[in-house]
Image (cartoon, rainbow, N blue to C red; front, side):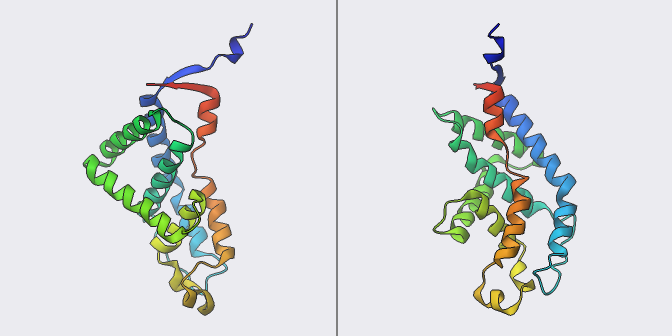
Length: 180
């Protein structure tokens, strides 16, 4: 009778595999639309002409941001194990050494802190990282270009886009008991 209260068990490895597969697939399949939205951004004076296949930086932004959310949802060292499992699977998927991938993602996370200081809002940091990593400042009107800051209207548009790439860890936890 109370079986609906019992959560299904899922291993950290299964969560990591699902996360990696889903994020890679989502970015690869949707970046052309993201590039089109950025290329047609009405707040830009000129189009950035982002190639629909140029999603490497976007992929790293999405991965780095999502990995920062893990400690907010898992504790008791489970966050470290889950992150490590994800990094192992990403390194395998990308054919990179794990330590090189970990360093690259860490550099992106440090970049988030730099461009979003003093705020610690990961979501907004991801949006600002897109702005700077794709050198979108060159496309803005003179006022924002001289300030070297994203136009707030563009940043709102990018926040809406990035929201679609933030992994729903709460949903995983509400449906499953993640076990080692």
